[in-house]
Image 1: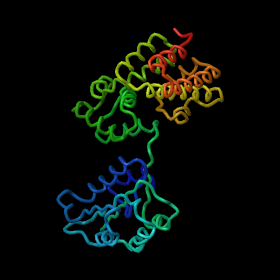
Image 2: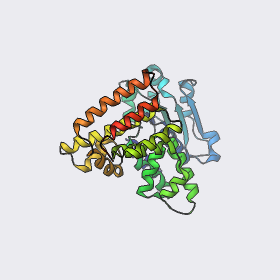
Image 3: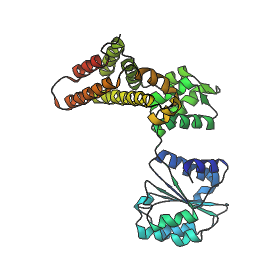
Image 4: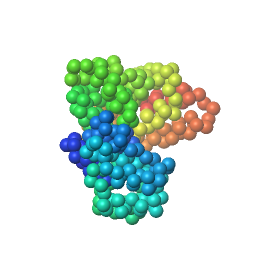
Length: 332
């Protein structure tokens, strides 16, 4: 079962058991087990029927005793075991007899950052329960995640508002959820968020300015690029961070240019570049402003600038100003 399939099952109030949730995306894992808790037990029933354990502190016998205990004045019991990556192989195997003969009224959920799928416990777990991985979302999956969170709250965003939201917030799901909560509170009864709403609530002028700088560099607009660079540095942004984001942008442009020359269909570019579809038009236009040879020259320059920022005594502002001039050379 995938994480998407699990959430679909939970939407129908169907809770598989036992469950083992693991992976890098801790935000979604917590969201998942909290949703399970809400499905199984109202707050009034949780004192006697919801048990949380940590693998670093609890004994397996103690956990199994609770799993085998029938619920008190309720239909179900939830036993949650966190940090399960700290169990030894021997400790995990102590759970196998229970997995083969579980208490139907108990939902047993393990949570871990990672697993060793070669262990006997995990091979057997697949036979008796659901082993569900929560992978870190790629950048091009973030817009879909935001739209789904908005849908669940009965809101939506225009394409332009969504693009701005993604640019300002980034890909940290916890931060995304926090900013969406603020945005929905601001909207009130209005179901649709537009660009002005996002601009009012979600403010990150430094990151927004770096994206504007990249647009100016990709468009070879020398004056705009120098002005934006000055503003960013005056605001206190770290020169290495600015260089990193410039390099990332030009890596996408170069890959876009090469993909087109190799005959890649435009509809395949979002997945290939790891970006949302509504960013593709701008990347396509900018990618054509530089030849393949020019991209190679620029990446040599990026490497030199990175080395100079880390080791030379030259002023960072001077180095970046020179870099911007070289990138936009020949532009208006």
